[in-house]
Every structure is written in structure tokens, then in C-alpha cells.
Length: 519
Length: 51
Image (cartoon, rainbow over all chains, first blue to last red; front, side, top):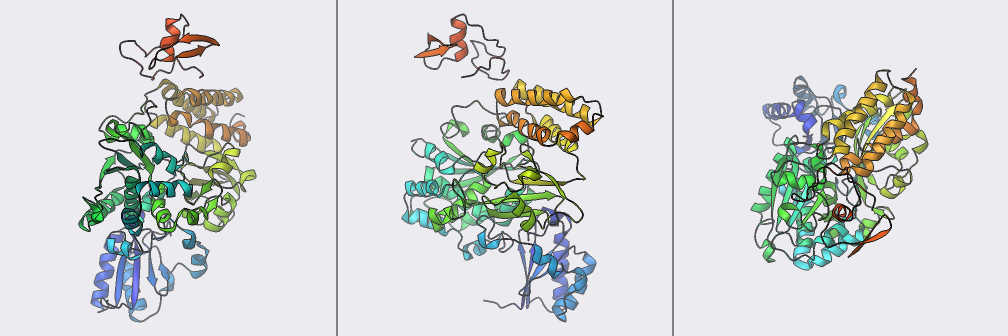
């Protein structure tokens, strides 16, 4: 193997692509060439480095120097100073005190343990870190029932928002004898503020594929579909590449590893409608119809895509499965808390010093997540509220900072973990404006199939718009709670049932913000 | 199959909707999008009842 003096890890994600990372990478290559360093210094592409809001960034190993916010004009200087003369360019370095504040928590990571470490476009690197071992283990030494039992025993719960136990979901579909069964990956990720699935697919696409394979084996499906939103161009490109590589290596296809098991995975690109994150609407869209929810029962597990038994799982859920099969259910249950095992990927935004993503054990408190993994509040700002779980989430006030973040603990506060988006607001933020944009979102995304949601989201938006413009009265608040409660009871799918959570939590916790607009 | 509507027992056949049983027995539930020829659409939600 060739030996390199230094390795440069370049984080390629949507943000850095927009900042022109490809041009800078090409420039870096040509500069290294010019200085005859190309044989000594290796450039590697990887997923997100975990540094957010820093434009084009790269980390130089072994010394772990992080360069951020790079411009084309900086490259010649870096190559000459750092790589030729051995003097880091301090002007461009993320200073070491700042870098130390990042707690990436790699030790406890399950889903994102390879993200920012391996090259996501190279299957050999995934194999090199133990990739597809679980798949081989399952196919060569385990029965489908054993895989299913392992996942059941691990206590893995769906990461899409509702937290339904994944093993239980699979067990509805597994015993059905049918011509065809499907695994469908919900990669529609429409919840505002959530980008965890994007980072999983960008950083480690093979892990998702391995999860799909294991699920397909457990339930006896021979086809998998990844329903992904069309905006995720980079994810799509990387998944397409990953699937091709897996086919080339015989990891996908017919008679995989001489086990007699056939599986192929396809990608279906969605148009980004929020409602298509609902599993039956997703299936409708997958079939080529308009994306509106179906009436349940029958549930997709019995009659889903093309009326065949179908398991629909979130990206993060399936990305957990390879580790469970590799290390066993007991190892997995060691992460997280009772009744809610494993880790959760959060995306943290707002008035925190280091916004971005973190993967931590289930049951970590909101305070720890903000303080330890997001660097605390921005200077001079104090915590006012957090919107947890995206638009369909709840507003938590400072009394709730020590709530444990897992499905059961949050339910005690009538809150939900949802997709894992955490929007932190300081006292400069206004809850009325926040709720206004949440309700505008619901009005826009309501699919129009059922009356409570189609009419309700409009009524709610009119009320909040009135309050925001100073034309509201106090009774409007009660009216909003009444309408959203009616929507919760009567709506066809989870979209119409969602607005009641942000509305009631905002009004109950921050009533004075609303009253201030009525003076 | 016996179902109870407002506390009273009524006969229902498998696959039948609650609305159909109610209408057959002269219990009025407001409804718009259901029609006996097209079956349930479940869109207008006018007939939502507690079960």
C-alpha cells in the first residue's frame, strides 16, 4: 500500500458544494501537483465533517488541523505554507480551543460512526471498516426469523417520529406468504429543520443499503425501494453509486453469497411534498399516483405498495440495523434508556454557538444536548424556548430543559421526539412569529384530501396571522386550541393531527407573547 | 355480528361500515362523501363518530 505523509479530508455535503468545494478541491490538487507533493499528500472526499456554517472546510491528518471558510485564493498559501514548509496557516484554522468545543461523540455513535471518516463513494472503504459483515453474517449463518428476533430484542424503535417498534412492524409482514414483498425506505425527510437522513445518506450510503438488505432478509422481500426527496441531489447520486457498487460486488442481485436469496434495491425520487412522509401517501406516490394518504386498515404491512405486504421504515431506523446484527441486541440495548434503546441523531439549530448535528444516547437531557453538543447558547443570549421535533413538534420552555429526550419521557410532558430537530430560541425570538411560520407551513402542505385538515389549517393560519398583525383577541387563542383539537380527532392522517401540538404548547407556555401582540 | 350504537345492539354483516348500519336502522349520522354505489371515501369527515 502506498504511504502518504498527510491525508486531507474534504467534507462534501450540500452546503460545501454550494460554497464551491469542487473547484477548491481541483485547485488544491493542481497546487499540490505544482509543488510535487501529490505523491506525498492524499486528498480524500468524505461526508460532512460535522463543522457547520463553515463553508468549505477540510481537516488535515495526522495533526488534525481544521481549515474552515476556505476561498480559492487561500489554497496556494495553504499548500506552500502547510504542506511544503510545515507551518499551518493560523489565519484559516478553526482555532484549537474552538475545535475542542466540538463534541462529536464518535465513541457512542452507531448510525453516523463512519460519517466524516470514510469516503462514501467507495465501497472498499465501507468494507474496510467492517461494512456488510452483518449482511454476510445474516445470510450465511442466520435464519430470517433470527434476524427478526434480534431486532425485536434490541428494542429498536422507528426514528421517523412516531417511535413504533421496528421489530414488531416487521413481524406483521414476515409470516405472510405472498408472491412479492417490499421494503420501502422513507427518505422523504420533510420535517422542517430536520436533515439527519440527508447526513446519513451523504456520509455513509452503504450503511442504509445494508439496513435495507437485513430488513428484506428478515421479512422475505426481494425488492427494496428508497423513496427519497428530489432536493437531495447529492444523496441520490451517492446512493445510485453505492447500489451500482454493491451490484458489482455481488452484494446485491441474485443468489447473494450462494445463499439463494435475491434482492435488488431501486431509487424513487419524490417531489418533496410533506404529506408523502406519511407512509401510505408515500406508497401512493411510489406507485405513481398523487400523494395522498390511504385509509387504514389495511396497514402497509399487510397491503402496501401495489397491494403487497410492505415494510416502510425511516432511514435512521434501518441504518441502526447492521450494528444490531453485528454486535447483538444486548450490546445495542446498552445504549439509551429502558423502553427506548439506541442513539438518536439530532439536528440543532437556532441561537446556539455550534449548530449542526449530534448523535447521542436516547434519554440524554435537552440541557446536555445544548450545552455539551451544541456549545451552549450564543454569547449574550439566554434560553427561552426550544421547538423539539420539527413543525409537528412542541415548544418547550426553560422549565423543561432537564427532560430526558426519549419517546416515553417526552410523552409525560405531552411532547414528542419527532424527527429529532431541535430549534433553540433565545429571548430575541418571538413565539408568535414562530407559530405563524409553522402554521403557514401546515397550510401550504395540507394535501387537501380531508376537510378537517384542509379547512382547519387555513382557519388556523388566518387566526395566527390576525394575532401577528395586532388584530387578534384573547378568545382567538381558545379558538385555535379548539380547532386544532378537532383536527386531531377527525383528520385523516397525522398531518392534520399535528398542528395541535405546537399550538397548545406555544399558547400554554408562552401566553404572554400572544397577549403582548393584542395590546 | 352484533354492534352497539348509542348503547343499543344492532345486527351488522362483515365488511359493512358503521354508517351503513346506522342508516339502515334510522339513526341519522350526517354524511357527504359516502354513497352506497361508490363506497367509503372517508374524505369529508362529516360522519366521524367515536368508537
